[in-house]
Amino acid sequence: MENKKRIGQAFWAALPVTTPIFAGFMFIGAAYGLYASAEGFSFCWPVIMAIVIFGGSLEFVTVSMLLSPFAPLQTFILAFAIQMRHLFYGLSMLERY
Image (cartoon, rainbow, N blue to C red; front, side, top):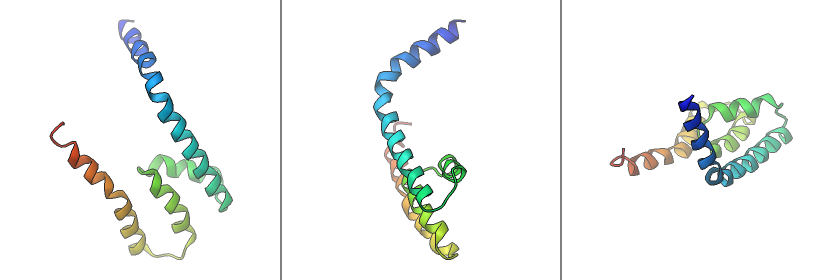
């Protein structure tokens, strides 16, 4: 019971700080869903891509890559280049963790 109380306190303490971030993610997610829907994808595909793809900017590019002719090497290079920014984010946090 004590653990649930601590989790509840942590939740209510974090809620005001994380609400603006959540609102931003909701706006970007809705924009992505509308974009994918306008390009002809059903509701389930943007949801699956949002779960599987780590970076949000790659999700927008994925829609056009899936609609273009099959080019696996170019797709890999583009996806790697877009997601490479996370390597630099990790390097900047190396000493901290």
